[in-house]
Length: 276
Ligand SMILES: Nc1ncnc2c1ncn2[C@@H]1O[C@H](COP(=O)(O)OP(=O)(O)OP(=O)(O)O)[C@@H](O)[C@H]1O
Ligand SMILES: [Mg+2]
Image (cartoon, rainbow, N blue to C red):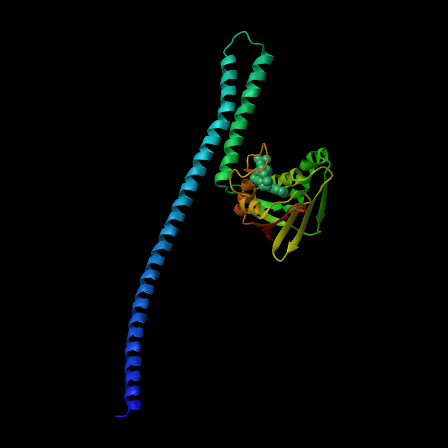
């Protein structure tokens, strides 16, 4: 055998052995990879179940916060009513005083009922007395209610409505509550001399309502948080207004989107399905 042939065989043997080693290494790496994938899947499952656990805890926290708020707010009217009822025992009261105590007691009981009603709407809004509503008419009503508050803050309200039928299904009081919360926020977001515009038009088979202000606007983070309970940047805000508003829109089969820019303003686009 020549030296060249011997050398070639040697090289072939070395390549063969190297290949075997490489093959084995690839097999090992594949096995490790498989293990890592399983580990990763386990991790994902753990993260997912932790996330679910956290969501549940948040829900429980929200429910207990609602319960605490209700009992706190309902206690005041009940205490006042109790006081008046005790006073009614006094036989020497004049008719006028007696009537006044009864009137005030009834007013306080109504207030307690309203508080509970508001919180129930907040927790789980349902449209109980569904009726056909004319959205244009309801918007005119809302503008009428909000105008004094806007004027007081030097803010003009501009209304723009295409002239057509805007019949939707819903509950009048709740629709008012929802839209008033959104318009009120718009007014509160503006310094004096601002403008809030309310536009109503048809978009396919939807009524599209755009409520726009040129107020201070919201950051991305704030947009993500708006509508979650107790999120407020106001000193005296409850942070429940938009939560109630959005829940009502959803309960009426409606939808909404928000666009906002810091320093420029905010625009809420709300849609409701039109009915014949
Ligand atoms: N049009 C808007 N422009 C800028 N920020 C807004 C607007 N609407 C809502 N926000 C922000 O969203 C937060 C939550 O609004 P929400 O109505 O739920 O509560 P609130 O207005 O703070 O309190 P409340 O409604 O009880 O007065 C507000 O505090 C504000 O920071
Ligand atoms: Mg508000």
